[in-house]
Image 1 (spheres, helix red, strand yellow):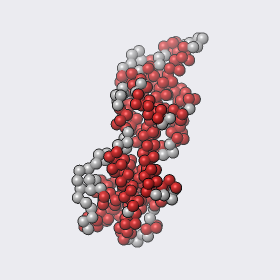
Image 2 (spheres, one colour):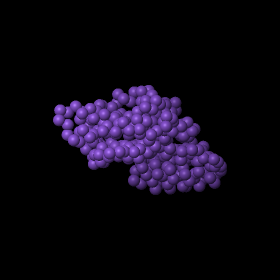
Image 3 (tube, rainbow, N blue to C red):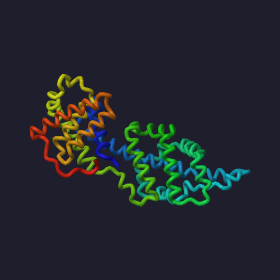
Image 4 (cartoon, one colour):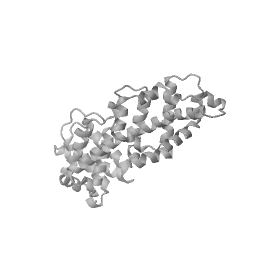
Length: 314
């Protein structure tokens, strides 16, 4: 699920925390543990999104019970179907052993308030899309997928749902695009196969062989990296460079020096984009200028290793 850009951002966040001397990142070992926890949290956030999404869809059964229990049900009440919960697409998630096991392993159910789930369902049930779905005399798998996608779109734009995610995972905004993309991919593939979850679990090649190694290299070679950078800052004092900019530049140099399988152009473009997203307004041009000079210098000195076969995940 995590691309190398996602991993770079997490490494950057760990290095920033270490720069601020947070206790969880004071040593290399502690920084790696913090990084691994952040990676796990991204996966757990995806699982929590899935669980909340499923709980809202499954509330259709409670709605059916309520409507059937009325003393004077309306025609609409009598015609109502809990097909949002009972269709084969939703049921493929509800009956998936690996998913149920993952939800239980991380105890994610305790993070979801039943009353908030009810409120989210009621709000969604009033939408035009849901009303049209309920009125369909026959719904096929495509219809079920479409309404489930509509449900998730509704949720990620709902303040109650957003607060629910942020309360449990403060970095929700950082991982939002990653999780939303994974959720939409999952819903579009419904009904899911029994082993579908394996495609979203953290991969060792991206997480360990790339991300963890990058983190360790930057921490261990911090002084050497700074010595390479400082002469190329022109009129800038290293202490005046924005903290994130310096971290980004160090990470990029580490990739140039220690990851020959990654094309240098890819590294440069990726970190310029990260600077644009996470640092100051002027950071994109500053980082681009410094990295461009450093890449030329390191190449001329023969320090940039010959590039080979790339890793997966770019």
